[in-house]
Image (cartoon, rainbow, N blue to C red):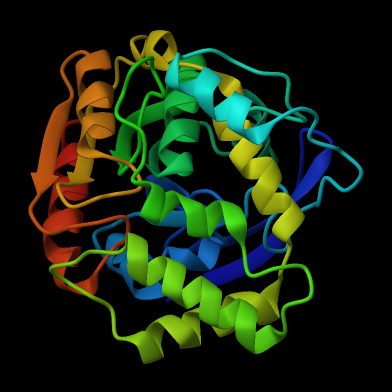
Length: 300
């Protein structure tokens, strides 16, 4: 399959991206989540979308992977206070917000001279997708929001057992093996209980991500962007393109109530809940997830 990689100047930074499929086909923009490099969109998953007649673009968000690191931008104040303010739907002062990250995505498309896309976002990427589709409707053909949330007030918080490994980390002096093991174990904890990924596969992926890039400070700033932006409900309510919301009923990190909130906010959206699915994309569910994406693309 035709594929190329590059770096795009965007919003004062550079974004690493991969472009696969026929350049003349409709474009699907894939936005990954907190601390997640673009490679967490599995290549075979993306290729299956391309095989349906789409040009697929995945990219590293700022501060992660091979994209520009926002070094020197300090997070002021208490992370716990920001988390509490998020539970109330309130914003906080942070180095950058999800609105900045949506503008990054817009800049990538401008660089590639792409006018409109089907946008697909997972977790924090689903939040960025909501902001992008709500603020730049002229650039969006359809939207898909996977295991995400509007961050509106009084939604049930994450299960502490799923959140704490993300916030705590393996420690500043951890070795490569310890960091890889922590990453793999975190993905096991937040993953799909009915469709567990084998630990050797989790370790392999974690090792590949570490070797590609390891930037824990960027992950903390991603967390600050999520907790600092505030409620997305009003922005999501502006989305008028066909939208599907996909969420696992066994997701402990982003509770199903988050997906239901997204679906409530976006008029005419379709909510698809999956039994046994957590905060990952298990291969056993690809047919179902890709089927929902394909149906939503076709609504355009």
